[in-house]
Structure formats: structure tokens, C-alpha cells
Amino acid sequence: MSEAGLISPKLEDYLEVIFNLMAENRVARVRDIAREMGVQMPSVTGALKHLAEHGLVNYRPYEYVTLTTAGVRIARGMIRRHDILKRFLVEILRLPDEVAERDACGMEHALSEESLDRLMEFLESDDGKKEEPSL
Image 1 (cartoon, rainbow, N blue to C red):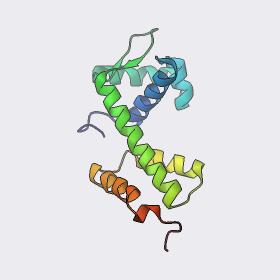
Image 2 (image 1 turned 45 degrees about the vertical axis):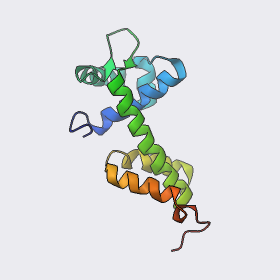
Image 3 (image 1 turned 90 degrees about the vertical axis):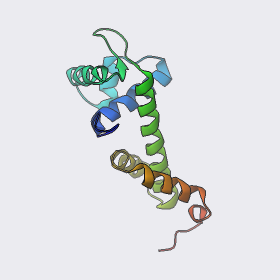
Image 4 (image 1 turned 30 degrees about the vertical axis):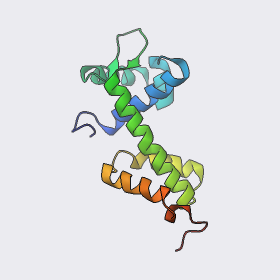
């Protein structure tokens, strides 16, 4: 759970999807969220109610969904984690993009801030810029 146990990894995924939809369309609709998440609309509705109870989304039935300031903060943090992990998997481990994408999605919820910071330091260091990893 994120934010001291506030929400589950699945709900963090909802925030990321809403953030990305808002970046594209300025708002998100339940059916668009369902499509992106690969779930049915009633599942989205339940998740949105939970996120709204925690002050992370603005949601009312039959209206657009937007993120609150707190929701944006969490979504940006998750996107940052995802991007750092994917970059490591592609650039250092040389995994195919689709494998790196899938693995980054799974790893982003479990990695501590300390590990993430160290990974970022590594990527920005000379060690992270080697042509071929030494095995």
C-alpha cells in the first residue's frame, strides 16, 4: 500500500491512468478508464468511490473524473518510479521494451524510496553508462 497504507497498488494504477488521460484530454471518463485498465465500468466506479473517499479524485456519477492535488502528486510519483525502472530494464539489462514495460509495472509498487534513489544515482553515474554490462 502507498501513502502509509492509504491505497493499494491497483488504485495507484488507476491514478496513473487518470493522470495520463487528463494529460491527453484534460479530463477522464469512466469508460476511458475502464478501457485503459482492461476492466468493466462497475469496477472503475468502485475504485473511483474509494479514491474520492481518500481525497485523491473528484468523482460524481455521470461526470468527468479529475485528480485532486494529492492524486496528482501520487500519480506523478508512480510515473516517475515506472520510468526509472523501465529505463534501467531497457538501458542496463537490455530487455525488450514490452518486457521492460510489464516488469516496471509490477516493480514500481514494491520498490522503496531508498532503492529508487540509488537506482536513479546508478543510472546517472558513469557505471550506468557502460556500453556493455559486465556479467
